[in-house]
Amino acid sequence: MDRKVNTHEPDIMTSLNDTAIRYNTDKRSHGYLPIYERLFEPFRFLDGVTVMEIGVLGGESLRLWHRWFPKGRIIGVDNRLPDGTLESLTADGIMVHLENQGDEVAMDALGAAYKPQIVIDDAGHQSSPQIACLKALWPHVAPGGLYIVEDLQSNDRDEAERLLRHLEGWTRQVHRPGQAPWGVASVHHWPGLAVIAKA
Ligand SMILES: C[S@@+](CC[C@H](N)C(=O)[O-])C[C@H]1O[C@@H](n2cnc3c(N)ncnc32)[C@H](O)[C@@H]1O
Image (cartoon, rainbow, N blue to C red):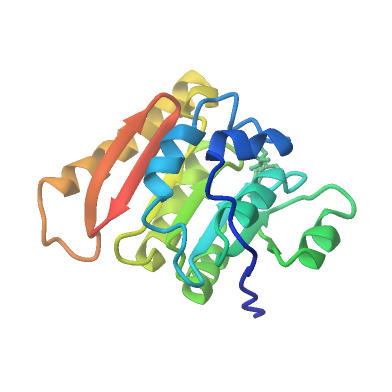
């Protein structure tokens, strides 16, 4: 697998929210970016920091991460891409894999290959594949890393209930430390977002 790492000068004077103006991703209108700027601060300048986003569409948010993490390795995963997207992202140094997030075997293999510090699930917003993806990738998230599930507001009511009930199990792990292999340090919620931090 290619392990290309980004190497451009960061613009340290511009916020993540303002940086995103140039990219056509709804993360800005959802209000996630000021939260992400704080959460990503310890990771931003790490050499080879690996950011994996599930749900690529045209690749706009991947391009934002590519800009934001100057020494980052940006990985996208999607099961269906618009024509030409894979080629143009690859040409810009962003790696993309065509996989279904509900395929635990495939997601486990991607997690093992990349060991991401940050995972963002912005894919199908259906609880079963989301849960399968979380279970498969979590063991591979680097210590101190983050797993973010986006757009909890856009799951339909039953879907959101199911996912939130599942996340309650992860929250309980925070209060039962030492129960390997979970290693859950915290579970935070913001409007539309759940963020699980690894110990
Ligand atoms: C909301 S869009 C991603 C937007 C992108 N992250 C951004 O902010 O610019 C959701 C993407 O998830 C993909 N997707 C939907 N279900 C999926 C699944 N089961 N596995 C992988 N990708 C999926 C869709 O093909 C679509 O491209």
